[in-house]
Image (tube, rainbow, N blue to C red; front, side):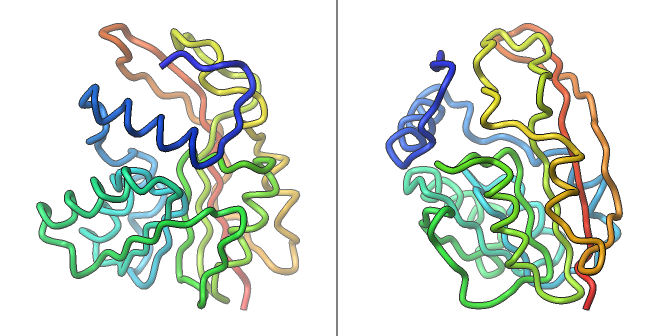
Length: 212
């Protein structure tokens, strides 16, 4: 999908995004490899996948013993996520909530709050600061985002506009040292296939533990 250089990441944008993805058949994506690399050592508990889309990462967590809440603004994406959970046999471990993450507030904290490339209609770092508040004491925050200044050779140069990117330094600055312990903070380059052509990109990945 060709997109403008500046997006309004509102409900209409995401419904169109997922409607087009479902029509193309590209919506049943596998879970992101960052999960296995950075989270496989955590003991399962309650988890929130913020901006879960069609559920790939939430399903990985459920299959690894977590009780997962997947929250997303797109009703269409959540319908697919629920279908995937039933097919995977983990429907009893996954709850789906249609929510605008810029205004929604969960009723309780979570042992893990994770997000993978979610972009609400608010500045990216403000979103990360917001979801960090939902981590219970002793819990973990996991952020995977697009690195500022690194579009790689993605065929759509506007696929990751600057307002939807972040730096490691910017994320860490949101997490006061007396409240958080940084477990991992890396830029990771990944290769993938887009439209039958090899592509690459750089991600920012931060995992932090809440002190308490």
